[in-house]
Image (tube, rainbow, N blue to C red; front, side, top):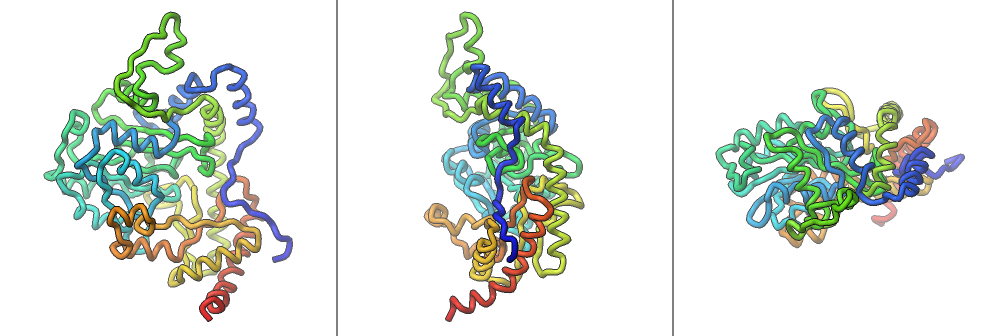
Length: 411
């Protein structure tokens, strides 16, 4: 292609305001969990409409803390999608529970809700739906399935007894700012985990959060429990210990270390101010992709309309009827044009870790079909309109070139 460009896949959108905020935090002398982290939690609670938010070191930590807070462990089962990143599933293993994977629906990136009920047993304590690419799952349908299985629900502690069905802990790593029937991500599922990793729409470099809706438990007490988990089980964090003569503390249990720092929160506070504009720009970029690729056979994930409005996190594109070899050839051609792409996701049963646990990709044919012809195009707010047009042209060229490359490799 003429006028070759270098199009990064997902660089962070960090400006001078974020840099200045980090510098201010550094100069303040308070760089670990402190007032900025608490402020970010308050603002995220307001933004999401959740009953409460706890900022942590990652979405993975948030999911593990949620499962531990619910008392989920050995002997329990937790269901999640076969079509996701390992972070949706590894915390299930970390707490000693048994992961149960559900296939996607045919032609969909979402779990097969029609099969979900068949996987629920008396040992099932939670389900982890995945808001892939920023579009929220059909939570009403999930709750409907769980309602039909109420007879199997066997709560084992006070928190679990507040629910009359299997508990929903959403993997919303992608969906901060999305909505479902007008309700923001963070206020729909019983518990919601967010990622603020560097590649996410909203970033704190590393980081994440756990949000929860009102389910009849004491929100402040629940928050204190999450904070205990995040800081070794220590009953006072560094901020509380700065009060006069307040050094004394207890270790309530041997906890973990997954707190957010004020340096991270400083970035997040600026990002949250910018976030509505960032979401709007993502929507513009998606519309440009949709228009530019309308004359191809490619199927783009629908981000907007109906019951959900996405956060526009990933540009998932399927090439129906094409093979893994063809998809990989498209990636190679686009790389030659300077366009970085990705694949979301390699289903969990294809990985050694999950094969070792006994999962077989043959049991998840829909997930495999989604994966083998999927490519993820760049989608981030540092793209110009011309950049998007360049990616579209490169993708179209790759669709033509890939067939000949596959034939050459097969000779």
